[in-house]
Length: 108
Ligand SMILES: [Zn+2]
Image (cartoon, rainbow, N blue to C red):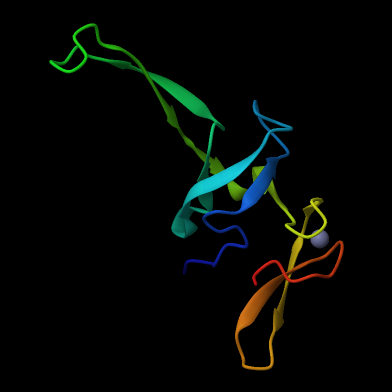
C-alpha cells in the first residue's frame, strides 16, 4: 500500500543527509510508491550523451536522481525552518499539513 508522503511537488525542502546535505531546494517530482522524490539540483547525475544532430559533440547531460524522503526535511513556508509535518483536519474535512515548529498550516 502506498503511503501518502508529507512532501509534495513544489515544496521547499532541506537535504539532511547524503552528498547534498545542507542544500535547500524545490521538489520537482514525487514517487509516493517508493517514498522517493526528485529535488532540483540535488543528487545530480551526469550522463554521457551521444552526439546527435542537434548536439553534434555529445556531452554531459545533468539530470536529477531520486532521493529518499528520509533524507529531506520540509522547509516551512511560514517560519522557514526545516520541520516535521503534522496533519490536521479542517472544518470542511480536508486534511492540511501543519508545521510542528510554528503550528501554521503548510497548505493554504
Ligand atoms: Zn513553521
